Image (tube, rainbow, N blue to C red; front, top):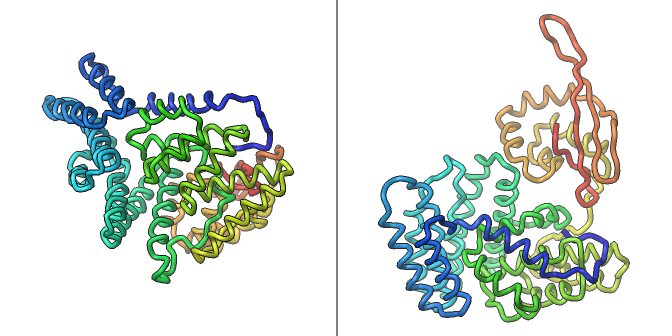
Length: 428
């Protein structure tokens, strides 16, 4: 995440290599067998040298080998096979321009997505690229259908997620797809799925952009090898204007700008906003740089980016919020909102009081029910500060509880975190 310190001498390649390491470390295509490893290497070399026909031939050979394996470790192979098929379909679509072939392969991928981690399987990413092909080939109704199907999966899986990263990634994808659907409906004057974009709350999601890149970009491990050898802005300018490159290039800029904004990252941001002018991630990048410029006293640059954001908001008929919500300007104010929401059974407002990634907590509140929430809310008192600084604070609250016919004062601790000027709870 961009900070207000400017380190012009930092080498952007160091940050890029961090992202490259993450992709290689988490890559689903990693295998230990020497024959498979050799084939992986040949595939990488063919792709990096832009010999896509050879890449396809080698990938199909590897996919056939995976299909011919025995019945043991079925879940492991299914995950690997899914990633290889996803990569193959992508190359057919965006490197060989064979959209019909790619579409058929994407549509078969659901057969390969066997549950390999209980009910926490990630939604069908192929639906994202199916929608993109339908858009590319002039079939907007079919594109919307695919986007809507993925949106349903995301909403369903959000109820089952338990870890913070998965929840944040899920919520981020939900916003992105809603924005895509709204963009297709601009001329229809349909009420947007995403009428409000609170950019000031998205800095948390930017921290997981490398992981989002791994999940969404099947070619990441190869493209990053090319990217680190190229000037970042030039690489973005030469990139195709498809979703794969849009995700990858966003991850590159966020990672390269971690802790620093220099001439290179500024040029990359400008290249990105020209390549994908009104995309969801161009809004996030504008906001991150706007925040840096504003806090570092570069007012002219900040005003320019804010003006661009306002024009896009006006065109799309949505509200874009760039400043912190004053309702959460202190832990005490956040707590007052929290208590009121509890008494009113308002789960949506309760969610606003927490840092991103607490979907399981919201699910628990819904299961409690409004009547019980009101009952608990009426017993909530004021909070007392224990320790704190500008970034985080610890408070406590006492409440009376009865145990074996005796009443006791029980103390609970509440931890707050300052997220871009808004105090949110992350542990209670």
